[in-house]
Amino acid sequence: MFRAVLVANRGEIARRVLRACRRLSLGTVAVYSEADRDAPHVREADQAVLLGPAPARESYLDIERVIDAARRTGADAVHPGYGFLSESWRFAEACRQAGLAFVGPDPEAIRVMGDKTEARRVMAAAGVPVVPGSAGPIADVAAAEALAPEIGFPLVLKAAGGGGGIGMARVDRVQDLAAAFAGATRRAQAAFGNPALYVERYLDRPRHVEVQVFGDTRGGLVHLYERECSIQRRHQKLVEESPAPGLEPAVKEGLVEAALAGARAIGYVNAGTLEFLVDGRGRFYFLEMNTRIQVEHPVTEEVTGLDLVVEQLRVAAGEPLSWRQGDIVLRGAAVECRVYAEDPAKKFLPSPGTIAALHVPAGEGIRVESGVEVGSSVSVHYDPLLFKLVSRGAGRDEALARMAAALAATSVEGVRTTLPFLARVVAHPDFQRGAAHTQMVESGTFGD
Image 1 (cartoon, rainbow, N blue to C red):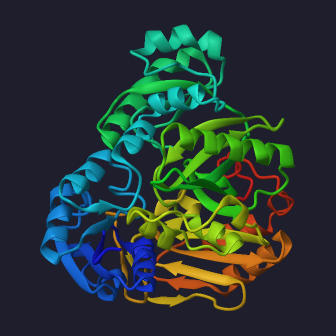
Image 2: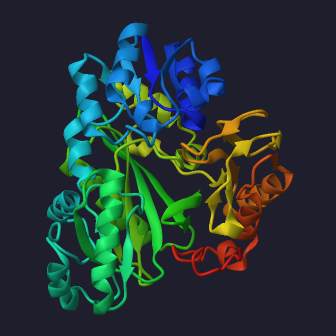
């Protein structure tokens, strides 16, 4: 096992990784920007290193500074969390070249899955269903226009060099393609440094269901069941749960088999998630693979009783998986709500500021993963996730009831948050009966 782990992240995920390191009696190193000098994760680590100014590109995204921090503190492993450098194959490769263990998959797996058109090709070759679309990046608007009759409208333009819904553009008519192509190209270049786009059929009102997988360096590979992630804004998740409600057993079985086939095709090691869109007839299509721990991993931990982050560290140290597939038993249900410093009435516009007061619930079946405390500054420079509320129950009804009570008992002063919106989601009849789809937020199902 490692001497010390540098956590190349901030906020709640940094604290979560630090907690796993302490469970294994590992030394810990935090990194921080000038904006995070007084952040909880800095205080909780054994050592802390200032990376640079507040902008992420000058601190958390600066590979050389992160590697240098590891060298100076004697860390021999780096955990990237999620976001920032977690899905950068160049960062994973830089860690390897510096003699540091990267707590995640092989750089080549990250590279292949980070190239969305290459990922589609690899998954299709492995027998995983993919959404009908272009075989690779499209050269220009003319190419998109030529493909449109075959794919059909509506269609969607997507960035080939990144995911998370960034840069996506729905197109309903051929005459709208030129403007949509120009806008999506600009956004792809700005977000990923790669303007390439590909085109897919747009699925109306699908569900977003993903499968957690975990592999080791000795060929072991398991799934940890599925998660429902359909409640989203700007293609980014707000509410997640496990198991996915209302899916036929045959569909669930097909999803986990496809996820394992996809992971096996790239020799995947460590924690990863294959994401799928499921249509109203139960047909599912590969969306993307996240080659990292995910924000919503706590719901999987709650229904399996397993610690995914501890296992990440063990597998990165070369140990075999602690579990076989038959050992992983699904018990009960769990729900996660992400509490952001955003104003839902203003299209989820970020709400920076200082947290003047904070109360989070405690009690049976309630878990809180937080990156903030009273006095914390919510910066314009980073994702405005404050904390995650997680509830579990013997069944979905109990988990939802506990979540409703937890949301009602939570209060934040100093910034606007998604709390009132989340309460409406959890109480909505369609959500209660498990009839969620990815377009509910944009369509105004839950109000402002």
